[in-house]
Image (cartoon, one colour):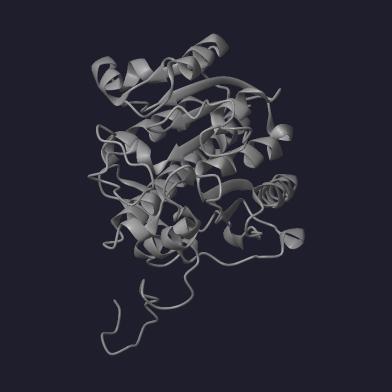
Length: 329
């Protein structure tokens, strides 16, 4: 029993250094030794509308402090599960260095950083930034391929170029489709009159992409959607916060009505982690300047922590099965 007169170190959300989930900081990637490496890419030079996602990593980090009551793990009352326990070494690697006005150099810096994280054997968790950052991240993951891409987004992002610009946030999934280590692409949440041109949709379908809107997915049901994914294979997940409805995440440069609710995304990403191996993920397009309540950053942080929780829980289950098999031999 705790002595009520004994002082404790509470490390409340509003105290201390604001790292992701208040995890330890490791900004020297040469000396990285971790299971999970969280890194920010504060680059919004690829956006075609409102900038502001450069502040996304900082906003997500601040939002994540609400879920950082100690580092002994988090108990989920609905699932009766402990997540993110001390078994896992999670570190915050700070941000990729940005060069103002030079999108290509920013992408080069991003690719270099993610390649370093992959070489150290850590799971990359990438906080954007606009969706263009997924292009260099995808390139950097080639040694983890082949893998499938699962996108949660309001927009198709399949434009070939905009007046010669091929590496903006509207081109990212098209660029991934051109990489030899990327297999099938699943695009969930796509909707609305501003999502894409018909030519881009036709090009995506010709590639073999699976494109579903929230309305279509609700009619199908979660299990039928998950059955579309090749079972037991590797996935990379890219989450644009505008995949959610603006009522849940208003702070983004290109909001689109008719999106997912938080619970729908939560259940979807949990199902994906149970279907195959997630090798990394990004969460992009959080733009704090357009949401003075901070709820978008909060939701982005929560989804990131949820997905990380589910990935590591599946690793735990896999390890426990291997131990059981070994003990029964």
